[in-house]
Length: 401
Ligand code: ADP
Ligand code: ASP
Ligand code: MG
Image 1 (cartoon, rainbow, N blue to C red):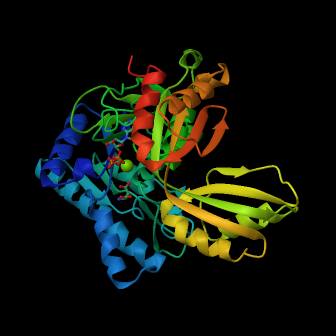
Image 2 (image 1 turned 90 degrees about the vertical axis):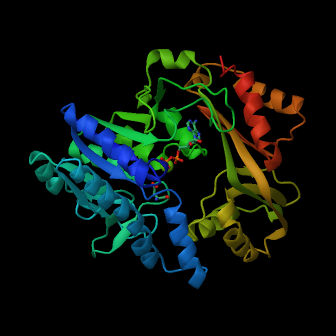
Image 3 (image 1 turned 180 degrees about the horizontal axis):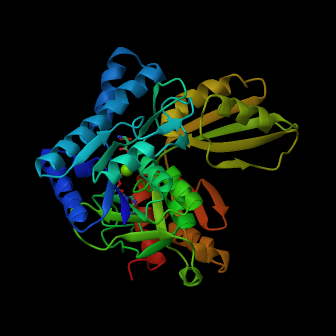
């Protein structure tokens, strides 16, 4: 069997943990599997490097940032390969480029365009364990690019697809996907399986256990994906196609995203094209807009609200200032969060949203914005009630049972 393993920052957080990963890889190798390992930077390393750059510039050049940040993953790949070699295993460390990963030019948020797996296949054929530095590739000009935060998950899934691996195992400090973040709700239950679509919603809505782009790609390529722990041998969670009995479960999980800020525009000119202008300008600045609410206009004006990642709020303010002739007033709130309820069962059952609103109301939590899709309900609330809301919703949908 050919298996791609991915070990995240906590799993390779110090030398003992890298040794632990080497032992796990060695065990799988001894059991007869061919292994390609993708590694993250040691935990905290990427943030440390960002801090170094920000010492010199508040907005450092993105090309240089990629050069800088890609180094964290290389350190781990080299160390893991050395650790394996010292245990008598033939191993080779590769950068993203050496693994054949070519991306577009979007520095710090590049998309993978192609992967030439030949070098990896050659090494595997020679009996080597291939250790690849995650989170990176090169563009057509040969410059290093990185894939966005949490991007080693994407590297692993993309390599599994290109290698036609039998499965891809993502190792972190939790032994699978839970009904909610077990750090917020200790009674969260581990799921045996979850559909790609539900997982995609959970990770897009803020569950960082898997990077959302990696889940999207796994679905597209049909990669058999597992979430497991590098600290135990517990069964993990399989992320897979939706099956018939999955719809019997109403709600699979609840998620908290604290990284949200709300923008409210009052007295917006109610004319065709205004929304297009506002959101095109935001998109031009690469500001990711999430929830959008617009009221019916009265007397030629309307109110428009939306959320952006907290880190983008200053940029969003700047963009909005250019619209002062079209907007009577604006306000901003960085102290909001988004709580979401996810489940494929919502497609065929009603009342899920009503339950959410009812339990939040019973706890005196005011809902500022609501958005829904076929399989999720999201609500923006005051940040200080985020964790309480998660625990309350978790209980209301009996996810601890
Ligand atoms: P890594 O550093 O290995 O990439 P992450 O820190 O990105 O790992 O992801 C693991 C963390 O995801 C866990 O420690 C857990 O707190 C968090 N998490 C959030 N939501 C969930 C969930 N629904 N199930 C499991 N873990 C979750
Ligand atoms: N080291 C990168 C990050 O911290 C990528 C990853 O860990 O997946 O975002
Ligand atoms: Mg991660």
